[in-house]
Length: 260
Length: 349
Image (cartoon, rainbow over all chains, first blue to last red; front, side, top):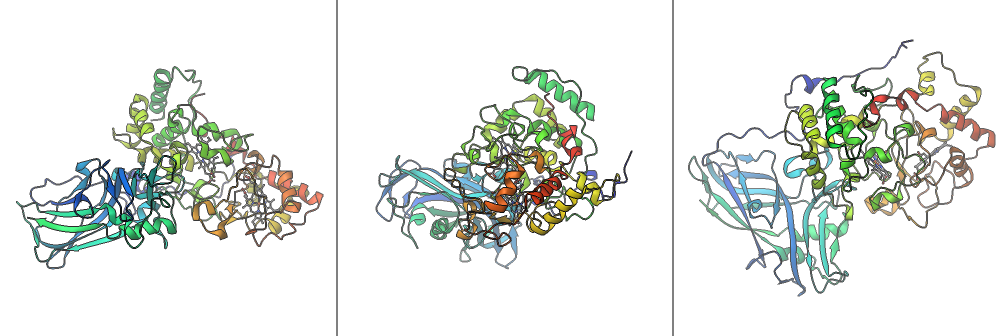
């Protein structure tokens, strides 16, 4: 006996019949890239300690609290890169998510492609991943779940620093800072904006300017909170304690210069 | 289409699963009528398939993945090991699930159905999206940092899965996003809305409730439905229903995620659909029977910290007969159509 089911069967064939991009798609497949000539801006991240020493993994440094430390892993997300022209028009990189991993030099150079010709005076971006991408399910590319993603408590680890310090209290002298939290008062994304109007960079068919930035590791441990590895050697959950590190790294990245 | 999928599957199992799985596939499992369903009167689901569209190939892939032991680091367990079809995809007889992962060792595996209505997943709501749910068990859980790359490498090396992903997503590259979306299509289509109670409500098949069931329903509406709200039989809110704190697990529930004192001992209200099939009960599987659950509500309320205002400190007053009636009613929530749905069965047996 076929019963008289009074249900509404809603069949969402929308995107199925025509494989068009759904406007609500939080994770569109990247468009095929047009051939690139000179319209690329390179954003180069150089890592330092106290803005003066070159930073290398597994090398000994001293933090502002005078604890010695070595870093074995340093990774963080840079997202939503926007460059602004001298006429105030802006260009936002599409699908703009970059995972910087200091162990991989190529990842420390962002190639912003297909930038319209013109004279640019500033760049802005976010350290971290916006809340939308933390809430819209499985992502791909740089945002594919990895060791920069918490699986039991959904969310990206936006900034990760691991290493050792003789001052650390943990049994194996480990430092472990996994900083995340995408929403609310304890969110850890931080915005950066650098103005170089005095030396605008020109994008034209033949030039490929590069913006040099430096990321100072000691800023993570300096202000407003001086981190003492004897009492603060691990932070692996979200909340007010994670925010301390975010407030610290909010001034981690500095502008150096632009090469045209 | 169906046939090709089955052949690919068969082929994969025979060639690649030979050392582990007996290659005795008797009959192909059905993968038909794959559509999103919103029963009349139900709210809009939280997850729609607008981006991750439903297709038979994705469903068949998702099913293979759900029962795939390669998804565990040790090649020993699959989702289906802890979520068994005959018990509404809960872990029958297991208070807490013992996988290879420590993290799972303190919680009871809930049933899986009507997932697209859940605003978040897990007893503490720690996972915010259905597509991300499989990452919890798949990933190595040392301090929550997921690394699914070893699992992806195994799948990428498998020609069975190369073929199935290609069919489902039209691309040669096997990505975690596509894996997660295929499992989501499979799990998300596990709908349960055809229990005796549903037929009664819809005036279908001339089904009536007995006097005891009806009395149970009325009591339930008065005492329980503030939290176990129709039609899903959960409002999915985090609440403390007064369970004593297990001294061993010390599970703080929602506070584990938020760190907020006002969330201590609150757990996601479970749906009571198919509840007769999902024993043992509560987040740590402490009760073996529905009777014990009702005894808890009548005289077991002990943890008053953040106790939900809908439950008096002295418990919900229920006589022995009333308990029997409520249990009779809860039994009408078993959906045999969903439980017997071969589309969700293990394709390897």
